Image (cartoon, rainbow, N blue to C red; front, side, top):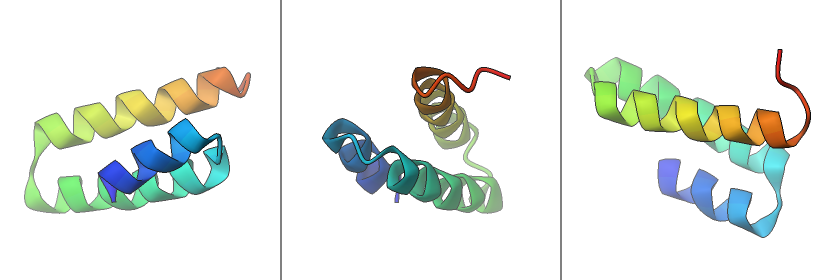
Length: 55
């Protein structure tokens, strides 16, 4: 999911990328992968920031 989110983000399909990052975040949390969770939150945050949604 994470890699798919990254691909969609690079294609400019931001909403789909965010949805995929949200799914991968759940997976990383479920398996206790802190690095995966951190990378996903970082990428998702960047997408929101690029959209102007910085709250």
